[in-house]
Image: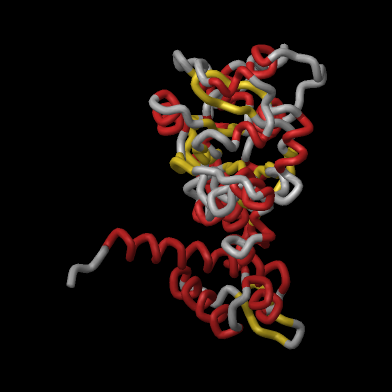
Length: 345
């Protein structure tokens, strides 16, 4: 069995540092009981920390009297130095946390991940933050990644604190509602006969359907599948796509149709030759979500780390999501205008 000297040395340093914290608190309170309660340790543990320092400095440091612990001359001389050490320790810990935050991983559903990087780059002051940011796909239990620290920010279609997969972690999460989905884009081949008639759910149901899976929203029950079931429509679900690259490949090679709930995703699909996206009429969108609620977008962070995330980054992500999932102010905008939303100057 090999002995890990590096870990042993780190443990020794941490023990010595804790001893100085205990010394400072005993010096200031004169009470071992108060110090034990402050740090959540036993009174004998407080005594052991003091014994460690007594042996180091060859001094009793404190004299026990009826009124409490009285510092010796050596303790009085050590106290200012210990205060400096404790303060420096706090600053180093803060810097360590800040260094971790230099790398921020953002988890989003596939319909929102396309376009976010470009949007962030266009925001004045974002580059000055010095953040190295990356985007990864979200998943149903993304809150676990938030707690473990592997993900900084996550955008979800639901309130994670109210769902069984993450409810046990709710006390450690910060959940900020952003917006409720207000629009949906129909996507298919540009030469499809679908575009020759009004876009109704019944007409769309006549074509093979591809479910664009979004973790926590329609990966278990898709609203359109549920609608067709309730209306007695015979819907053929061709495939379930977990990313936009797979979706575009399926659509290009078939007469299938799919739904996308964000302008950024519709804009991405329309870049592919032979594919078209068009907004579903509002009345049809309302019908679709009678049985299954609309997606409700939220921003998830770890509660204790949220203060370290730059407010500019949080507010920009809020703004980006709203632009992609909410109806533009002008209800008569064309499709090109709707999917062409960019950062406002």
